[in-house]
Image (cartoon, rainbow, N blue to C red; front, top):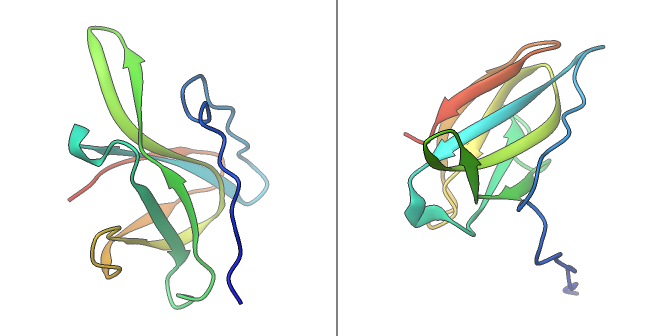
Length: 106
């Protein structure tokens, strides 16, 4: 049986509050502009069934715009990012306690 997800059209268009520390970190995944609006799934390595996702949004930065997906609170460890077009594992990132990890969509 399918389900409907409700999406907030304004989500991601403003500042993001991260919740880090006590075994959690955050991830800022920078992408090319062509991924704007794409939802990129992430799961702990070895637990493909525990995926969650966030969308890529344009974010204003000094001197221009950065396209990024922000995962505001992830347990520490190694995580797998999934290609939104092919649904295949794309790359891994390591989340460190109390830190915001920055990665580039490879």
